[in-house]
Amino acid sequence: MSTAKEARFAVAPERMPEIPREKMTEEQRKAAAELTAGPRGEVKGPFVAFLRSPELMRRVQKVGEYIRFVCPIDKRLGEFAAIIGARAWSQQFEWWAHYRQAVATGLKREIADAVAEGRRPTGMAEDEEILYDFLTELINTKGVSDTTYARAVAKFGEQSLIDLISVVGYYTLLAMVMNVARTGVPEGAPLPLPALPLRALPL
Image: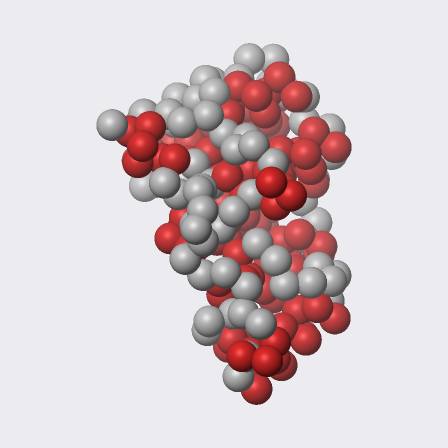
């Protein structure tokens, strides 16, 4: 059943748990120290698994640092994109982290809840609706129509559209790693995302 398939991605035991410092290689220690010295402050979430490939982790976390802390797009839209990606992959840790941030940056809770439930949200602002339509079409069809593209470029411009696509691409990469690693939701919190059939997001 699809419920079991989705649940398995978020339950213990984790396949790639934290590596004790005394068991890290020198490269792993350096990569962990570099990440800890940055704005994240610690190795957590997807980077626990990514530490198995320390040079890749260095490069991936730099992309994430741009997306989270440097990218000039509206944080509300960036977090909306992040939770759309998290829902597409049923990634529990990602949803746990970004649902709260999406609401804190101004996305209506009802909109985020609709995404969690696999429903097309109602009451979206114009920019949210354009972004939702663009990203769900991209995720579902692996591309977008000329009409969808033109509407998104007219609203966001080319640079911001590339940034928004990259938000979903970045969190898709993290979601794949965490689904395979079975990264747990912190603090023993209940799984925030309900299980859904493995189907396309509603357009």
